[in-house]
Image 1 (cartoon, rainbow, N blue to C red):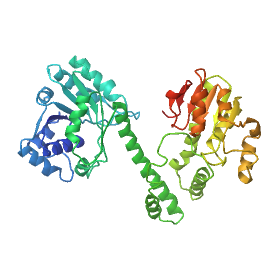
Image 2: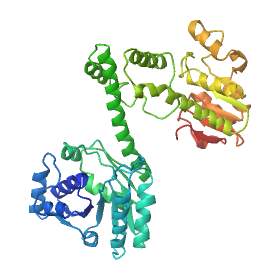
Image 3: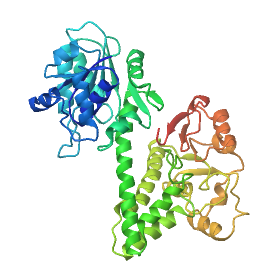
Image 4: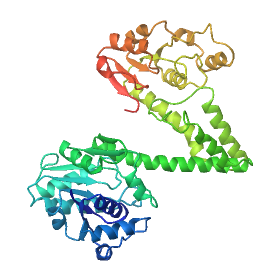
Length: 438
C-alpha cells in the first residue's frame, strides 16, 4: 500500500519504519527541515531500540521517503496517518491546533484528487475530535464528503517508549473506529496480520478508549505508590504486597469490577477502605486517590437521586435492596443509601427484594437497617409486579430475571425505568429507559 504519514515524531517515525519494513511504500511529511534531512540520510530523529536500523534499511530500500509538501504526499498515497502532537494547554485541555492545521492542509490537497483516500488520525485526542474538527476541516477545504468521497478513521496506538517496535508488532489488540467499510478494510489489510484481534467500532468509542487507557495506567501507578507509602510507614514491603495483589487474576488483575454500573457497598469494601485511609492518616501519609474513592462512590448514588427528582413524580419502585443478588446483607448497601436519600426527599417508596424479610434479619444486619430505614416493613412488597404497577419511576437495582420480567410485562409509557445493572433489554419495555452509565 502507498501510505503518507503527517508528523515524524515518535509515533510517526516508528509507524513509518515498521510499515516500510512490512513492504509498504511510505512517505513522511514534516515541517522540520532537520527531521527530514535526518531521515533522508537514513537516520531516525528519535531514540528508540531498533529504530535506527529499521529506518536505515527502509530508506536504503526506497520504501521510506520524506517531503514537506502535503500535496505531493497525498498525490503519492492512498492512505494517510495523522501523527502530530496534542500537548496540554494551560487549562488542561488538549492543544489541537496542529491536528487542525494538518487536516486543513490535507483537505486542500484532497480537493484536487479524484480517487478515494482514507485519512486515519492516530494522535491521542478527546472524543469528537476526529469527526467534529478533522472531518469538518477536511470536508470544508476539499469540498468532498466524509464516508463517501474519502474515508475517516481513528486508530489509537499502544506504543510505549523504549519498546515501541515490539509493541507495534505485538499489540494487545488492533482497534479502529471508522466511517466506511472501505476504509476499515484498508486498515485490516495493513494490520490484520498482527497476532491479535482486529476490532472495529465507532470513531468516538475508539477515541475514548485511548484516553481512558492512559488514565487507567496513571491510576494503577498512583494506586501502587500510595499502597507503597502506607506499607512503608507500617514497615511492610509494598513491593511484596502489590506482587501478591497481582497474583490474583480472578478478581484483582482481571475484568472483575471493571464494568460500569451502580455504586459499590457491602460489609467489606467500604469499611476496609476507611481502615486503610485511617492507617495512612495515623502515619501522616497522604493518600489522595484512596481517600477520593468513597466520595466518588457517593456521587454515583447522588446521580441517580438527581435523575429521580428531575422526573418530578413521587411514587418510586425499587427492585432490590441488598448490596448484591442472592444475599440478604443490607450493611452499607448502596441501594439502602439510595432508598434513604429518596425517602429524605419525600418520595413515596415501594421496595421488593426476594431475599429480604424483616422476620429473618438478625444481628448487625438487622441493627443496620433499623437505623437506616426504621419503617422498612411498610415499604417492602411481596412481588416485583406490585412495585412496578404502582410506580411512576421504576429502579432496577438488581438484574434478577423475575424483576426485569415484571418491568417488561407491566411497564408502560408513562413510567421512567432506571437501570442500575445494565442487563435489561430496553426494547422489551414500554417505559422510558435511562441507564446510569450508558
